[in-house]
Length: 624
Image (tube, rainbow, N blue to C red; front, side, top):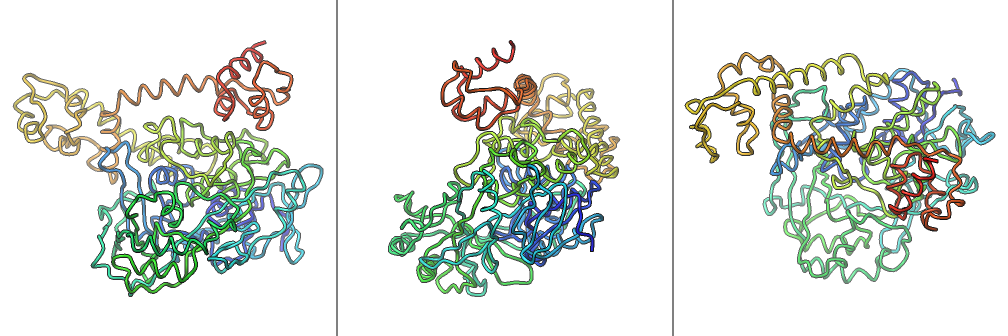
């Protein structure tokens, strides 16, 4: 067996799988080291991909040649497009997946990827020589050598699980923790801290009274994640179900707080503010009578359901008693309790935007060890780390999308520039240019990059080009086509929008919020001659054109703002700037700039604690 590789990826979660796959696709001899080959890309928490902002990230991964969207499409048991009431520019895709099938599909892909080998064992030490990484050592003493190592250990580094006052070392239920790497890197000068996350009890669906809950069906319209798929039909689509906590359940939880590791100081790590445990919600929102819960199916061939909204580290008895006070769960039987897990992470301000560490050359961090939460955020980091590790080995320019180009760019810039004090989760509000960063146009924004990087093939590139040629053709048709009152007024009257008294360009009608472009095209003479009518992706083409037309003013304004900001991103800061000598900059500003060492003025301006006046002084210094 060969023990020498170009790149070694440690950890087989969502970050590790994306990193290993993309590195191998780019031609690097790659080794993926995982503790359990049967749990690759395991859905350790809820069995779903996407959601608000997260769905956009999955589509961006797909546009860059990653596999998360493909695997999701192959394994989804329900698909919904969220935010439909807010208009297509704000839509976000989300899918429930068969959790077991999801992991099996990832394994099938990885085992079929050229240049990629998988090794099942734990890595517990890095081989470091002269300030750079040279490989890893496993628990059995096996040495694997490489020019780059990507750590994607998730919640496994010194992982400790809590259920009430009972604790057990582990990276997740049923899996041992990872030892050695945190201690080694701490000795090398890395800042290592602790975070906490949690998961919910899994319940037996046979014990649930679903008739007492609100059923939430999928859209059933063939939508999917990957841009390579025009339509995915889900046979036997599964529903989610909604119920709510109540005062009786809250009283049981309050009584159980005396045995809560979260409220008795046993858990030291900071938990996610936006996805708190149920006991945290009861205490924080004391006046709230109920909290919404979602029962999410775990797969086609199982009775297991995940209770989204009921993450907990309370005792087993308290969890069951509280659940049995909830409508539809009065006789519930659980497969396993919810638990909290504490784990080591590395402050991501210790990274460059490529996700390579500043202290050790060739060493990259990706996923939850950077303080993030979520499969989507992890997969995105793994993808970028894998791409940049290969580019560095080739001596080529690194690749990191900008904040105006991708949610992935926002994610990485936030981590590297601001750091984290709680598990980081992506929201649309974190992006300044969210009208530009839509789920529908991730292919337009990023496929060209993937093609040039070699992560996207000719078929995907040509499919994207064809789509936007047809979008442009449709826009031009609407701009050229004049429409008369006789043709359109009946249509307008039925949609409660003002009628016209003279001929008007069809594009002006299409721009009205009350008008659906697909319906409009059905009554415009000549639209049947357009090339899109023979295209498999007709729906996506019409929606893309509609968004461009309806949001034209907003899009133009946001692009203008992005261009102005980008000028600051182009103003580079030399690595050898001695901030301590710039006494006109505030003390906090000097400390933050010295610690993070921003690459550009734009990045410096986003550092918490660096004021506008500090940036002005920095620009003056650079201009001299």
